[in-house]
Amino acid sequence: MTAALAGETLFARPGIRGAVRRGELLLHYQPIVELGSRRPVGAEALLRWQQPTGLSAPGAFWHETDGPCVQEIGQFVLDTACRQLAAWRAEGLCAEVSVNTDPRELSRCWVASVYDALARNGLPAAALNVELTETSRIDAADGAEIAAALIRHGIGVALDDAGTGFNALAAVSELPLTELKIDRSFVARLGDPRADALVRGLVAISRELGMRTVAEGVETEQQAQILEHYGVQRAQGYLFSRPVAPEGLANYWRRASDLAGGARRLIEELATTGASPATIAAVLNRRGTPGPNGRNWRPASVARVLASAVELPRQRRQG
Image (cartoon, rainbow, N blue to C red):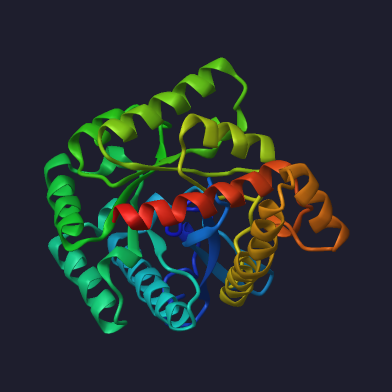
């Protein structure tokens, strides 16, 4: 679910007002991976409220918070995510971050605050993706103007939970977008002809309109393979990582970098001897080399690494 919308009940209770000033809010981050290579490419910022009983994710009544409270929390999410991303990028870690935006935040002043957050943290516009939700509450004309301004600046604009609302297709036709996020409810039902048809349809629409697709809630390798087969480019979910604190995300990224540096070289070296992906996977597992997301190596995982190693130089030559 979304950073500003992912668990809304708690924000309607006494106590959330002023939580920013009391230092009770924080962000966790869920990695977003490229399905073809399984490399992490970014992270989604997810809001958490630290209470005496533990961390709470937003609940079902977020829409009942008033405008000033929404704007204060939204500004906290934006500022914190940009500051954290700048620190990660300085270490060569996470490249981009996605933040969620309540429709009540959308205004020219909010757009200016987005530009300011990027500038203050020395971030390129392409490092930020803004996710729009509750599309039925976005004014078409104002929303299109704001989304277009962000995109002209180089910021990504995504429609979150795509396909779940009656107004989703209207939003796709009316709002400039760079990304569609396929809702977890469709991912969970993959194998059902209706769900599969909807996912394929969303991918086709995205391709026709020049948008990227991201699948949410991916929990199994089978789901990941089906989504990749359908042309979905990116994914996030428990298969790769749960939402984690900033240091957890940094550790996840470092492990992925170690894979890219160590295991990738070994895979390519073994491939030059004519070893099959199955043989290479067996060698890696005998050596105890961690596979993607800490799992054992499979022939399909090895094949993906080899395919990405072949494609990268080709893409560079074309560029």
